[in-house]
Length: 95
Image 1: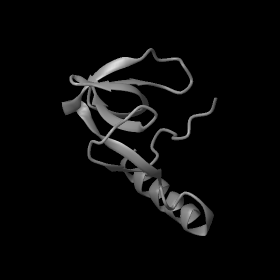
Image 2: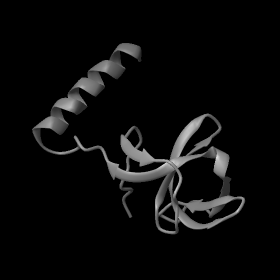
Image 3: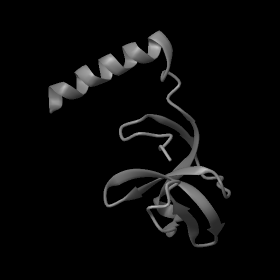
């Protein structure tokens, strides 16, 4: 199964309001990760990847940034190609 979001993708998120099946962005060891919500409870949300390589794990609410609303709105068409070219150029300056 291919991931919907690739490393470096831009996602629009909103503050917490999660339920099973949503995608959530959370912090782990200084990185932002995105996984599917399996279930929620008072302590946090249980998250796992869609490919089944990562076992469901409990993430405390304070580490969760929010729910993913959509992928990058500039992902397709001419605007998406221009955005990608500008982003690659920008990041190459710092590599």
